[in-house]
Image (cartoon, rainbow, N blue to C red; front, side, top):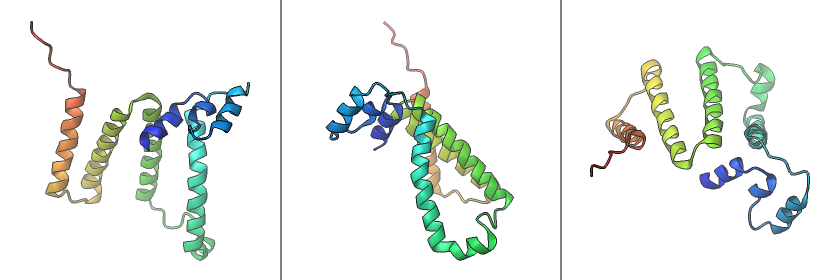
Length: 156
């Protein structure tokens, strides 16, 4: 699914992002002279719209009374706002990686961000790092190092 998602985001027009099984819509879009490139920001806004609607409905169903009485942001402390800021910055970084990098590099970026989040959580939030988690962390760091290191030159 991530490869298809990358194809949709990196596509230059709506016709290129349309699935193959929808031939009628593709031919209609192809013949349309007004097909313009869709930016990463527009794609993010399209995806965020659906998830926001689902989240609002879920919050209203589960905590509607509390939200009406205390407000939607009741209980937000400075640490919660820090997490919100980190998530927003992570989303912008993800958009840039999706737009300008290949699928393998995105995997390494995800692993690296998880490690950074873990280290921040360990240092300031009291997260306990277990031996299996540490082994996974070492494996991710090793894979990033191997992928980014310069290959050995052949001697003739």
